[in-house]
Amino acid sequence: MKFWESSIIKSLGWKEEPKGVAKVMSVCMLIFIATGIFLPNSLSETIVFQLIIWGSLIIFFVLLAYVLIKRFFSKN
Image 1 (tube, helix red, strand yellow):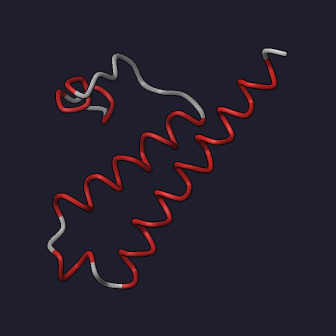
Image 2 (cartoon, rainbow, N blue to C red):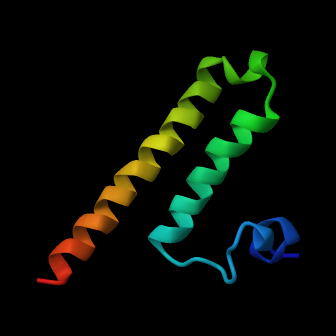
């Protein structure tokens, strides 16, 4: 079964597989949420996992800013 066809993803509201930047953003946000919920504190406080968590959050917000700026300038 493909990841994007699972019942958990469908319950989050995604009807179809995201494409391009949206796919990267959704994976980054899923990494951030999953590590915050499912990892014990002893693992999530290590430097490696902190880099993964904060890196995915930074990538998400950079891509969000890119999409918003792209939409703003394409309408003019």
